[in-house]
Image (tube, rainbow, N blue to C red; front, side):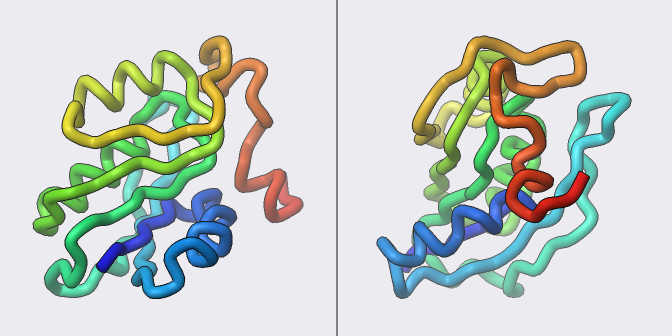
Length: 139
């Protein structure tokens, strides 16, 4: 059994497509936002069952920018007891890949594209802007 863990809120946009491929997957939610000053993740929501009921989790987030939120989510999942984890996204920055891989060398990263770099605000260049705002028409 596989668990899907979208990082709220942008990760929600990937759930439907992955569920088409894995219709029996279980879906849980981790809410993190990136502090705009420190660029560090802040957890605000965690809806995991008491114990893991799956053999593998896919962390879903369209953007792997600094790698902080993805790394924090994997920390949460490992503490919870999940042993096999994969990151699924759309676009990554080299800095995010480097940071995430240094924190979790055992977690494969699967993205469609690697963009040029991060800017001074920690956004991927050229990137897509804020993925959550683009999906949900906010911001």
